[in-house]
Image (cartoon, rainbow, N blue to C red):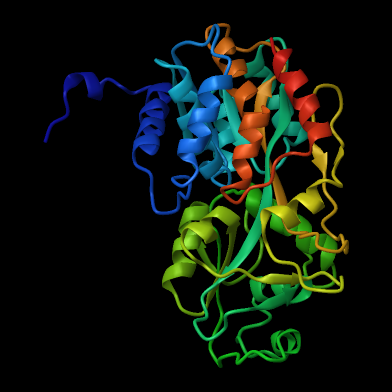
Length: 376
């Protein structure tokens, strides 16, 4: 069927992104678990969101790890600020940053802070300023697996590294058996699944393995998957879907993708008195120890991936909203500040715990709010 002329003329990157984002908002997939909290969040948000000056459309793209948080935030915000559209295209951190530096979107979501070369590239889009990192979403990176025979699985950093670099190939490998003495581990091959595109979640997994298992994970922590073997899948949703469908599979994704699809997750032996489960509370204990390493208005964080603190889940990520500190589009700036002001608000952050994320620590979040208020 031939498309109407109006649609055929939508050739610009900006228009294409708007259409894609709109489709994402209206077609919630099975990996979205925000339905149980949306009503409460919406009622609270409608009372407290500051909509003054906001108007039109706000386009954003990037990290799929924060998709479920963004879906809930967008739903609440648009319910409170009638007539305003916020379109967040969930793809990958790399694609989000690329769209941001090209000036296609007002902000990008990324699971990793901007690199120096990305900051330099952002200056073209930011006119009088540059891109900065605002930590907005915290949470555990879950290691999900598909073994119907095993209801409770413990791994440590070394065994996780060896699984994902294809050194451990069977589920009954002695290294896994030692960590799970009471489990009936099957004599089945392991099918590891990783992100096929550039991914901040991949980079955070690499940071964790490089710090906690340096003898077994020799790769640089980059967004592109570095190790041999395994199978690639598109986005966190794609990795979760593969693990859900393939018996013997194991993969990594943000926790809400596991909870929404009832995928069991690994407990991590950190060297503390007991293995630590992937949940919001345990991730918060690890994120609370983060320090700001960014300078000026940049609020990039340094996380302790090798922590052995009791109850602290070490495999965590923080997703950043990347914005221009100055030189933002004056037409969209009020809406940008209004929307991000909501996501960083008490209401916005409290909504995270109910969907498998961890709020940003209060001291750091206070600086995020201050920075958002000062965007130009």
